[in-house]
Amino acid sequence: MTSPFITVTELAAALRRGELTCEEIAGFYLARIARHDQRLNAFVTVFSGTLVTAAQGQDLLRKAGVDLGPLQGIPLGIKDLLHWQGTPCSASSRQLADSRSTQTSPVLTRLLQHGAVLAGKTQLVEFAFGGWGINQAAGTPWNPWDCEVHRVPGGSSSGSAVAVAAGLVPAAIGTDTGGSVRIPAAMNGLVGLKPTQNRISREGCIPLSITLDSIGPLTHSVADAELLYRCMSGDTFRLANADTLRVAYIEPATLGADIDADIVAALETTQRLLSEAGVAVTRIKLPFSWTGLSARSGEIIAAEAWAWHREMMTNHRDLYNPSTAEKLLHGSAIGKESFEGLLREREQHIALFREVMSEWDILLMPTLAVTACPLEAVDERQATLALLTRAVNYLDGCAITLPVGLSAGGMPIGAQLVAAYHHEPQLLAMAYRLEAAVAWHHHPGGWE
Image (cartoon, rainbow, N blue to C red):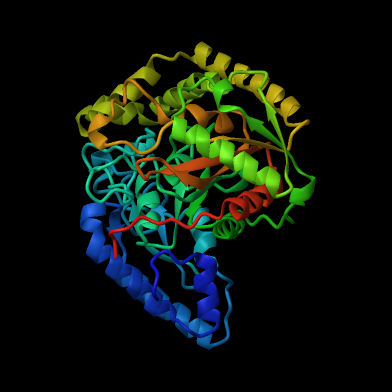
C-alpha cells in the first residue's frame, strides 16, 4: 500500500486482484495508529489483536472462495457509542469508564456479516452532546489539517473523522443527532452521510435524543458512503437519475447565519460547477428560517438527553465534564407539557418542509458557517456549529456533506446536500454528480 488515503472501494478492488491480503491491510493501518494516534487521539480503544485475527480469518475465507462483498477485510473505526459484545463502550465519559458491552448492536452485526473488521472505538464529545469535538476529560482529537496548531475536529463524531482524515482507517461510523457526522466530516475534508433516521437501526447505540439520532458513515468518497450505507441499512434501492433532479441553491445570505466569506465563495463556485455539469440549479430563499429551527432541535435534544441521564446526574454528577452537566441541566428544566409542544411544533415544520420538497429534490447549502479554528478560541457557550445542520434531523430528512474547497488558511470547506424523508436515492445520485464536478483531491500533510 502506498497511500493512507486509499478508499474502501479501491482497497476492495486490490483485494480482488490479489495485490493485497486482509492481514496486510490490517497491519498497515495498525502501524499508522501506533505511529500517529498518541498525538491525534482519535481512538478510545484499539482492537490490535482482534483486528489481525479477524483479518487472517477473512483471508482464509477468501482463499476458500467465500466472498462476503466489498467490505470483506476492510478495517473500520466505530464511534464509542455502539455496543460490541465483550468490549468497552464508554461514550468517552468517566461515567462508563469500566463499562463492557453485553450485546452487539445490529448495525455492527450487519457490518461484521459483510466481512468488515473492526479496528477500534473512536473518541467523541462526551455522550455525543456537542458539535465542536471538545472533550475536557478524554482529550480533544487533533484536526490533522494543521500539524502545528491544535484545531477543533468538529463533533460529536470527532475521533471517527480524525481517524479517516489522517489515514488511520479507510472509513468510520458515527452518529448524527444535529450534525455529528456532517460537522466533523466537513471540518476534516471528508464525505459524511446522515440517512433518514429510521433507515439504520439504532438499537444497541447509547442515545442522545431518541427522536433525532441517526447513524451514518464518514468516508473519502461518495461510493464508500453509499457502500457502507447499503451494508448497514440493507436498503436495495436504485440510484435516481441525476439529470432529472431539481436542485435549489439556498443563497447563504438568506440562511440567517454569519457565514465566512471563504465558505460563501466556495459554495458559489460549487453551484456554478454543478450548473456547468448539466444540473438544473435554481437560487431560492426558503419560506421559513432554516437556522431558526436549530434552537427548537436543541431543546428536544436537551430534554431527551436529561431523561436518559437523570439517574447518573443525580448520583454521580461529578463524573461528567462540566460542559456536559450544564447542557443536561438545561434539559431538566423542560417540562412534559413544553416537550410535547415542541414535538407538535416539529410535526408542523415537517409538513411545511415536505411542501417545499415537493418542488425541489435537493437543497444545496453550506454545511458549516466556519472552518476549523484553534481549540483555544472556542467558547461553547457562545456559539454552536450546528446552525446549518440541525434542521435536517428536526425535519426528518437526509443529508450528505462533501468537501468542495479550502479556506485561505488551508482548512476544508464542506457543501451540504439535503433531501426529504427516504430520498437517499436522489441524495446520493446528486452527491456523485457534485463529487465529479468539484474533483476534490486534497488530503492533510505531515502524517506520513
